[in-house]
Length: 312
Image 1 (cartoon, rainbow, N blue to C red):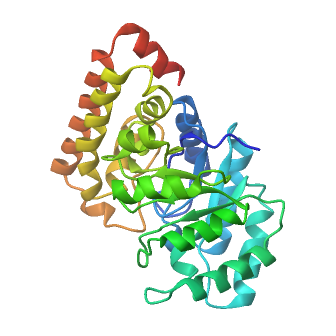
Image 2: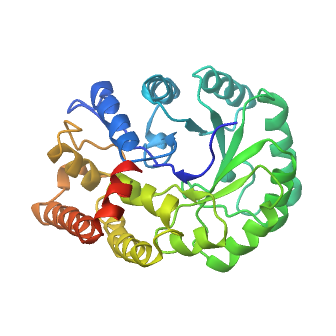
């Protein structure tokens, strides 16, 4: 069984200026996440602009990350209304060698669908996907967010097939309830929300899988692994990540890519999901100032804590 805890960045997809996947930059990006202490990588997800990638591109992306990474890699299945196309995607993604396939909750039931529709679609997926391949669930906001009901989560957990839940409910009361539902099952909750991260870890969450790992993978990884050893410093890191996460409301993912261009990791801030050409000097100044703030927070940590961050 792979290690299911810690920080699992929602990976960006680097492109060339011509709009093709830049695999050399992808290799550098994969190494950057890993060097920051990430426990695993979510290689095909919304931050990867999965809804703007062809099936062939999603497969190539997952395969390349899996080939280069020294940590587990998971990838989401975008799903299709056509049953034959769904099976083709499941089979092709499984053949990339990724460590788990992640199902989008909004493909298992519509906005008005209930437990019966969810269970029927989930059972069909479980029947079609190889039984030795671990699975995950992702409350993806696109094309619409479908937060699982308690009974749906419990049903999925009790199958024993699921290890990873990317939780996007942003509701600490619900998160606590979910952690209780998952107790005794292999399924662990990974919070996508920076503001509730520390509190969810204290409640028993498995870790983090959110956007701020594209700005500070080391701090996200450190908080997940050391929050209980360094509680005062953990609160400082938590508060910083919470306020810093407001940058997600700007021109993301182009702003994150712009920072990574400055770091020499990516070659372009090209994005298919947002108007990257409209990225203004002001927006890049905001991202740059955030980067300086994160460096300042690192410098304010005691030496022994900084060593832990660097080793995370």
